[in-house]
Length: 78
Image (tube, rainbow, N blue to C red; front, side, top):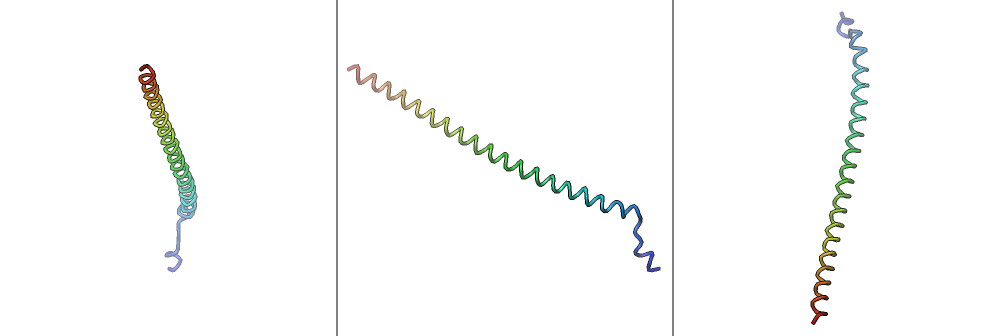
């Protein structure tokens, strides 16, 4: 009688390690992929922001040079 309570079918004995193996590999691969993706997206965002600020700086410098040239042109002609 005591033996029937602890009886585990053979299919369960095979299925439990298989499920553990599948779950562990999925957790490992999923966490690795998530970490790499989040790092990659933050690096890309940082690089895009740096490029945008550089372009803004270049545009401002270009406009300042243009204003300087116009000012020089106006004051030198008189």
